[in-house]
Image (cartoon, rainbow, N blue to C red; front, side):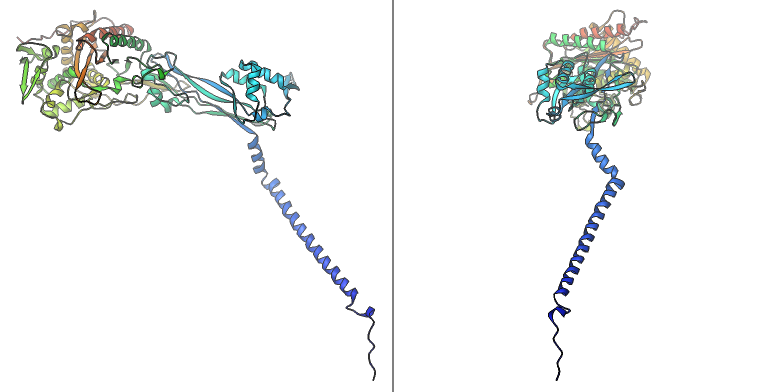
Length: 613
C-alpha cells in the first residue's frame, strides 16, 4: 500500500508567507481608514472655512469691528426757561469729562504716537513722544504734567483726567490722539437770575434729575434727545483716521416761555419780602395777573429759593405758596357771595339792611371785627366795611345748594392746573355735610379753604365782565427752528352776566372810595379792592388756631380792569387785620401799571353809598 508523501513546510500554502500577506492587507485597510478619516476631517475644516470666510464673513467682521468701535454720547442741550420778554431764567451749558483707560495709556510699548500732519496735498507722519503728549494734554487742561501723568498711569479701565471742560477744550484733547483718552458729555444747569422766579422755575439735581417747579413738570418738553459719535480705534487705543466715523446730532429740548415778567417778578419779590419782615410773618406771597387773558405776570414768595443752590433754602420755601398753600380766605369771599345774590336776583348793591352789632340765626351768633350799633346799611356798605353780620343777613337768601354751586362756579375746590407741582385744591365740603354754623360761615370765607391763585381766578371773572379764563403761567413751547406750540387751556366760561360783574366792580371800587379799604387807593387810577382776615389753624397737631391769615385783593383801572393783585401774609405779628397790606398792594399794582404803560383812569369813580337813607 502506498501513501502520499507529506509536503515540506516550505511548500505549505498556509504557512508563514500566508500570514505576512494577511498582516499587510490589514495594514493597508487601516491606512485607508486613516486616510479617509483625515480626509473627512479636512473636509469639515474646509467646509467651516468656507462658511466662515464665505458665508459668515460678515458676522466675524462685525464682531471684530464692534471691539474696535468707541461711542461718545453727545448730550442734548436742555431747553431754556425764559420770561415773556425772553429773559433767561434757566439755561444749560454743555461740558465734558475727560476720561482715560489707564491700561492703554500706561502700556510700556507706548513710547510715541504717529501724528498725521497735512501740508498742502501731502500727508506725513510725525512721531510724538509720550512726554510731549503728556505736556500738551496738561497745557490744554490747565494742569501740571505731574497731575496728568498720575491720572493716566495705572491699571484702571476708567479714570477721570478732568471734569466739566468746555467743548473747545474737549475738541483739543480729542485731537491729540492720546491712547486711551476719551470724553463723556455732561450738561450743567445754570440760573442766571438766581432766586428771581426760583419758586416757579424749580431746579435740577447734580445728576440732572428734575426735582422741583417747572423744571420737574415740564421735563419732557425741556429734555431733548442725545446724539452720539462712533469711531474706530486700533489695538494701541488710537483713533483710526480713515475708518468708521459716524455722527448723530443731538436734538435739543424746547424752550419754555413763561407769561411772567422778570422785572416785575423781582420787584414783587422785594416788596413782599419787606412786608413779611415788617410784620414778622411766617411767609407771604403776592400774585399779579392779567384780567383779560389770565396770564400770571408775577408770583412772588418770601425767601424764594435760589435754584443754583437749593440746599440753602428750607424745603417749605422751594415751591410756590400761591399754589401749594390753602387757607381760610376770610372776607375776600364776601365778594363772591354778593355776586351770587345779585345774579340770583336776591339783592342789589343798594339793597337796604338793618344790621346789628351781633346777629343770631338758628342758634348761631355772628359778630363783626369792629364795634358798632345797629346801622342801616346798603349791600355795598356791608361789603365796604366787611360786616359778617350783614353778610349772613343778606346771604341767607341763598339756599345751601346755591351757596355751594356758586362757590364751585367761582372755581373754589377746583384745580387751577397752572403747571406747577404740589397744587392744593383746598377744601369745599358738600352742602349736606355743613353743620348749622358752617352753612353761614362759608358766606364770609370760613369753613372752607382755598389757594391764593383760586381767589385770583374768582376775582378775574369779575374783572373780565363775568367771563372766567384759565390762569396761564406757560405761554409757549419754542423749538430750535423758532416754531411755537401753545399748551392747551380750558375754554373761557361765563360765570355771571356782564351786568352783575359791573355791579360787583362798582361795589369793590366804592369800598376804596367810600369804604374802609381807602388805603389801597392809587393816585390817578381807579382801584377796587377787598380785604380778608381769618384765623390760621395750628400746625402742631393740636386743635385750635394760632395767628391769622391776612389778605388783600384788588384790581385796576376800574373803568376796564386790566390787572389783579393779591397779597397774602401768614401769621403776621401785630394788629394789622389786612388793611396794612394796602402798602405792598399799592406798591406792586403801581409798578405794574407803570411797567405796562397803562394811562391814568378816565371817568368818575364809583361812590356807592355805604349807609342806607
